[in-house]
Length: 228
Length: 298
Image (tube, rainbow over all chains, first blue to last red; front, top):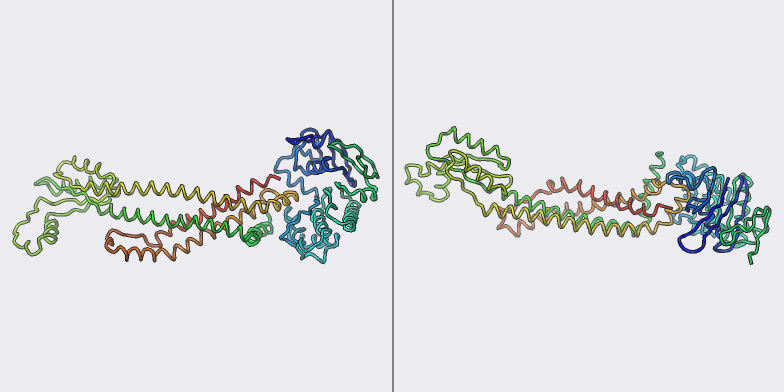
């Protein structure tokens, strides 16, 4: 589902963000990518989204060679990847329903389908009763659920989550993680970039640890490795 | 594109206008100001040209014939003159008509003392021109025609009018260029501010998998609507004020009433409406299209 072969990424200044990284993530896997700031985790996500191009190496996502995608092909490529960010990135002037429906409008789903799919997805994330609320009226945990609903409403085979619990308290963090686990159990490949040691250690999933742009550990049912 | 997507995009364009009230107002004010300036300037220039043209059409070249010339030859000369591009019309004035006009204008009752027509050899053509700047060419041509005794012209009037026309042309170009530069600068700034406010929104759309067209369309529709309204406001203002201003000028400068021929509001608006709308909508379209393009590469 996701393959990186000897991928390096350098920015114009400083040391390489990724240095000769190779990894294979299979369909239906749940993977944590952990590491300190500057370890290359966010660059990893941005490369998978084709926001960045690798300096060298090959990235295959959903059967697409990311570097060979033409500009016109990128939107269609991204529609197969749900993405959740630490800062939620909701459209602040639209309500919960519109934020989720927006992802469907982008792929030109009919209004009739949207009216069916959005309430159903909001029920899954536990926000059916708050569909009229604006993001500012929601707690951090609720906003992340909306972001999750938006990421999943188009049934993408892959979900990327970049620090999804970074702005949440422990209770909300756990609830989001449980949701991610449920989604994974339904067949979606989930890749979570996180700092949250407690969650990583408790969930017993595959853990890939990065340091200074290099994968230093890749464990099945692993735990958070302290780099110091 | 699905019909529902089209209406969604249209709705988003309209909603965006109200969602970003201050940006919309700033853009609207910019376009309105520029197009009001354009409308006022356009009206002034068009009226100036109309006044000059009317004055030009009143300038005649008089063509007198040699003694004993036949009626047929006079008709032939008239046809030769009318064939020239720069000639608007050529009115034939017979010796009798010339004497009647002269005696009426200058002699009054004293004309009754004359038993014969002193202007027997003064039958002539009054030639009116479309383009007074070509008067000298025409005069040279007419002087070369057999049967023409004398050609009388007013070189000073012709030169003054054609000089004024040129001046208006140069000033028009200069002012239009300045207006375009100022409006492009102002609109580019307001659009940039508006887009930077929504940079995050654009990046979210792109992460979700929106095409450039889908991202850009609401912004472009928003720009075009603001442009259309920005054109409509100065048109309404101009329509209300035009006749009042013309009335005021005519009243204040009644001494020049014979010279001051103004275009009607309908004549001005026949061109001003389409031009303003095209400019307004065009500025809105280009401004939003180009500026969104800068932020769309996520």
